[in-house]
Amino acid sequence: MAAGAGIRTVNLCKVYTSPPPAASGAATLTLGPQRGPGLRNKKVEIQALAGLSLEVRPGEIFGLLGPNGAGKSTTAGILTTRIRPTSGEAWVGDYEVWRDQVKAKRLIGVVQQRPNLDFSLTAREILQFHAAYFGIGKAERNKLSSELLERFQLTDRADELVRGYSGGMMQRVAIARAMMHHPRVLFLDEPSTGLDPQTRLLLWEIIREYNAEGTTILLTTHNMEEADALCGRIAIIDHGKMIALGTPAELKASIPGGYLLRARLSLGADEAAGRLRNEAGVSEVQVTGGRLDIYADRGGALVGLLVSAASACGAELLDLEISEPSLENLFLHHTGRSLRQ
Ligand SMILES: Nc1ncnc2c1ncn2[C@@H]1O[C@H](COP(=O)(O)OP(=O)(O)O)[C@@H](O)[C@H]1O
Ligand SMILES: [Mg+2]
Image (cartoon, rainbow, N blue to C red; front, side, top):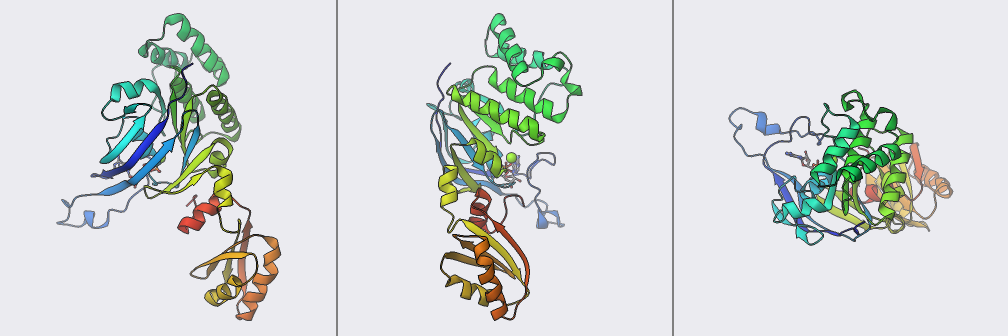
């Protein structure tokens, strides 16, 4: 099998000049003044990517992690020649994807966020037609399709029209299809959305196996567990920009303190924060409204201090959540928001 190819983007920007299609799965936008009378012709400008530079090594499983609307699908869309960048460069292997679309396409397998399958075909036909399109001979495509159908636990229903499939089954067909022509780079846009937990684990296993044969994999997800479980390196993106990059372990270690205590006080959050900042082991305290985010090198052991700080300010502790080092906390640290929001 051909070895994986690398991926590179240089200062990639994308500004959409029309609103997202209603059913795009993209974050909903409030167009505000757009809707007002007389302003109908005002130009829409949505900055989906604001100078994203990435470097994915051949053979890596690389994750783009970010909340809805971060620009993940736009990045995948540009790298797979579906979306034209506004500026910047995107490379797969030795090809700049927009200039060398045909050559770039031969290197890649793509699974879009929403499966685009021909409902009038069976799963087996979808895999075989795809392979035929890529010039794979009949004996080989019969063998490959049977193997993949088996691996994705679709053999029983392989000769039924996919129209009757569940969402999870369609997703599996879409992924199997992308693997049929042995791409050197596989793009998976939110591959496990809509899958039940068991199928998700099966998919993770298949992705790891596939990668072990050398294929480079770029996967997007808003699920930090998925990124943590699968990816050698992760870029966390938000608003079309990279906010952190590294291995899951490096990223988690980069959170000041590691543990996060999120507390809500009845009053005096600023004053309590001031007191806590001086405590040993507390590396950072952020205040948003009445909420305190305390980054520290221990979790439960700080609760006593927190309660004392609150009472010293005449405040009551209304709510407390303690979490261990995680990518979710890293995202919170950088943006003040949760990945799940
Ligand atoms: N086809 C489109 N036309 C206009 N705006 C779009 C389109 N696709 C995405 N957007 C907007 O671009 C931003 C990034 O979207 P997207 O790349 O889909 O993010 P993600 O995949 O991380 O959820 C969002 O604000 C989204 O609404
Ligand atoms: Mg997306």
